[in-house]
Length: 206
Image 1 (tube, rainbow, N blue to C red):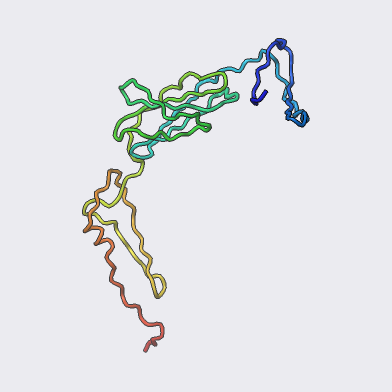
Image 2: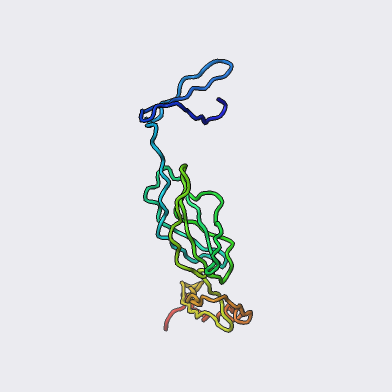
């Protein structure tokens, strides 16, 4: 047999078997491999149950991260397939071509501003599970917005840092909409602050 896979027939149902393999070439036959674990003929691998608790979260303006709880009876699980659907369309589109090993996947290529739901199914050698329950709907938009809004400069404060420098602090912007950048505001924010002349450490008090 040239392939590393071979089907055995005419085995007695209900009997327990172990298997081992030997390789050969023109020089002869090699030593046998270690024996497999005992396998009872007739044992059937069941199709996995559907995963549960499908949770989508925002990622970028064209992608969503989908997480789920693994199938309870995930015997010899190959992975998971994720599908997405625009709310109200009734059409489901696969998010991945190959099974996902973990319980988290980023679905790309979504339409910005549209509302989506997701579902997941498991797969093993016996076949595909049923679909999970649909997730809650989520709007596709970036998880973190912000930036410098028109005419707005973050509040700055500074304090002395020894004799040669200053530490500058500011508050982050909390706006979640798409930022509109203002060149004048940027220039004003980046203007060099007036520095007070520090008294010489060598001076003497009189």
